[in-house]
Image (cartoon, rainbow, N blue to C red; front, side, top):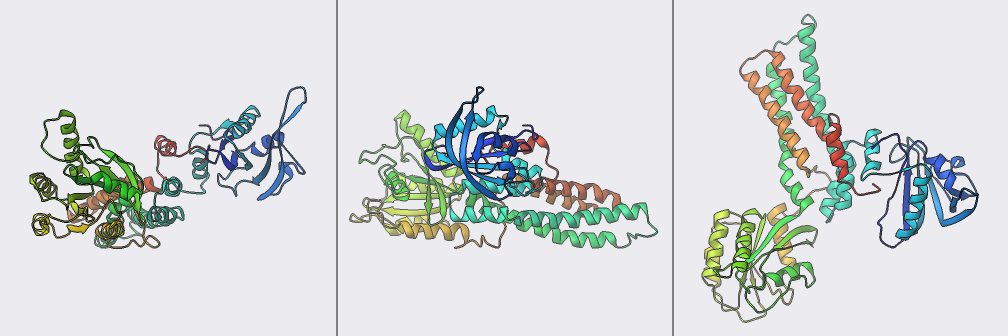
Length: 467
């Protein structure tokens, strides 16, 4: 990327839509767009934040004009635009072929096709947003539920940025005080300073710990709850998957061993996203292919956040059920046991089942009928209570949803703990500054103040085209 280039891209989806937006940004955006736009006014004559109706026109070398599309041109002059540069957007008709012709014309007129995330990167480089706000843009686009959306909007509004800047300000103040006292001991005294710093660090560490404590909820909000659907063959696992998805996604038959491999899908249950993994029925088998599926199912028990253990209520418990419960117990997972097929006569010993799964107080039992779709709402409430204590205050709380942010907070925390260790050992104050600055820089990585160019490039590469 060259930030001096003028760039363009289609900023809307490439399917057939009513409107398709082509965005142009850079120092020559207005001049180049004037070459391809014909309206009552030239774009260069339009005040910022105004729109004009006209045509996008391709003029050949011999002066012949071809109207490519009718359009509305919107002008946003820098620095008061998304990218902080002069920006023009053409609202065209939304056909992919047509939009491609508009982009091709702009490229022939002197612009460059934008890289993924390049518009947002320019907003970051222009100082309009910090790195947490830039990452929130993509999180909003990828949000799968209300909680993820509202958490991302909070970050876009600068909630995390403000908190990180507040902590960094405390750290840099103490660092500057130590440096001043070491350089000018006549005017700045360090008497009693280590004790005061030690006490202040307790508060700073508490703030960092509070942020880190949200990271697990943040991961579940952003990525969804990894949910393994486990049970013996023909218990109704695939039927439960279909019920949660609201569509016939998995093949359901009365033949045992129909599902031989894992099937992953996302489901939204009343604002909670589940990453569902339908697994092969767990049983002893001599079938090589089925055995591979059974082994994968056991691996998913170990890696999942939640186990949905499906039990067939229309038949008695057997050794396969007991073996599965034993495997779940070994991994100490969150478990919801679903007694399926309540639409049929129940012959299973429910008391025996309760005694077998009582190894963990939080384990819940719910009776459902995947065939008739009953029990879905009750299940969503159980999951929300189990993972989010019933509700999440996403309007006032900051949630750490990024692995990058979490690692930077851990690094800052460890650096501050080293400062406290130096204080406890009565070391010289100049030792404090090294670790204080390390914490300061780690926190700076979160908002992009100390972010290296290659890492910034990697972050923006994950963005969609036109954003």
